[in-house]
Image (cartoon, rainbow, N blue to C red):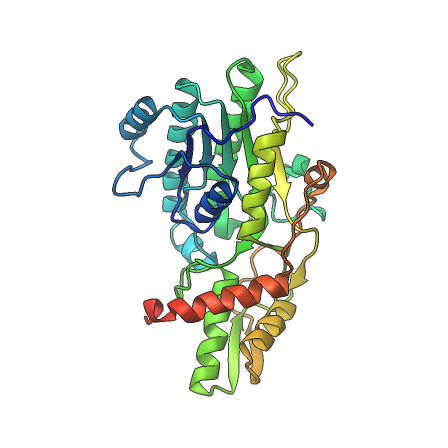
Length: 331
C-alpha cells in the first residue's frame, strides 16, 4: 500500500460539506492533526450544483487536497419521496467537484460515498467487487446511482490519466454521531430512534412503534472513526487502477467495523441507553429496506486501520448530543 501523494500540515485542504455529519468530523480530525489551511464554504457561499461557480472556486483557491463530503442525504422516507432530487443534486455536486479538481491539478481527492451503492440482494459480507452485479434497493436507488457515478468517474480518471489523477472513493456503512439530523421524518435510523425513545419516555408512552419487521441487519460506524479512516486513506492509499494496461481497477474502499445487528437488537440497545422501559412493537406495513448490509472491510483492515469507538459508547455520546439540541427539533 502506497500513496502517490501525502498531505503535510501546510497544504491547502478543501472540505466540502463541512457543516454535515461527516464533513464536520473530517475538519475536527484535520485540526487535531495540526492542519491550519482548511478551506470551507457554506451552501450560500458556494452552490456545488452550479458548475460555473464550482469551476471559479477551484480556479481561485487552488486547493491541494479535497475531501468531498457534501451531499443531499436522508433516511428511507426522505429518499423514496424524492428519488429524482437525490439523484440530480448528488450527481451534479460530484461531477462538478471531481472535474474541477482534476482540471485545476488537485493532488488528491477523496469522495465520500455509501454502502447503499451495492445491490439489494448481495452476498454477505459485501466485497468491493460486488458493485453492479444485480439491482439496487429501490428506496434509495437515486442516491446510490449518484454515488456510483462519482465513484466511476474517479476510477476512470485514475485509469486514463494516472500522471494527473489520484482520486479515491470511500464507501462507509451506516454512520452516526454527534451533530446528526434528528428530524422526525428525514433522519437516519439511529437519530430517529434516539428521538423516538426519548419522546416516549418523556410522555410516558407504554409502547414505541418501529417501522418494518425489525429483522433487517445494519452495520454502524461512528463519524469520528470514518473521518479517521478517510484521513488514513488519503495518507496511504492511491487506488488499484492498472495503469500498465489502461484497465480500470477498484479504487474505492469499504469502511466499516465488521459487525452488524438487527433493528430489533439496535432498538433494545437504544431503549436501554435512553432508559425507556415500555414495549417495542413493529409496523410491518412499512419497508425494511435492504435485508442486510454488512461491508467486507478486509481491504482497509489489511492496510492496518481499525475503528476505535464501540457502538454503545458512540450511542451514549450521540444521545447526550441529542439532549443538548432536541429543542431545535420540536416539529
